[in-house]
Image (cartoon, rainbow, N blue to C red; front, side):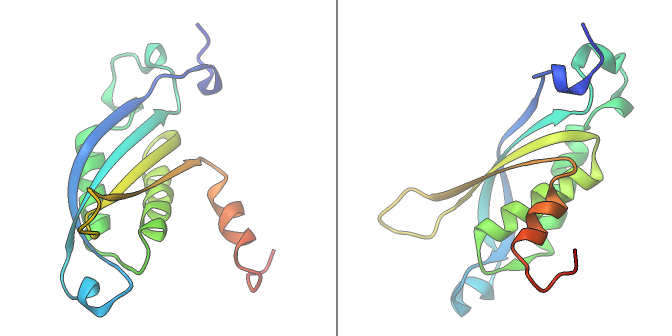
Length: 139
């Protein structure tokens, strides 16, 4: 099997990770941290075969959990879309990943079980996507 990261569909998934963050449009939502639930799917830069059974060659999921909880607790976003997108960029910058998908669930509507957003980001494309949405930023 090739060592190329583009050939590998190997991924790591952390399901239903509970974190707290200040997120919401209203003052009431921003007043206190809210419980959010995330599912994070990560594609390491290398195939599992190429890792050589070395934790330093992959995303240590214990460290991903700690970094995610810390990142979320330090944020104050109006939109869960923003929080999910910024978290994806943070994980790509912090860990040896080529791609990450985040499902972020918020429990805010009494008539629904939850509201969820999904973002998928790849290494190297985060800056391009952010620049596209900000016409004031220099090319």
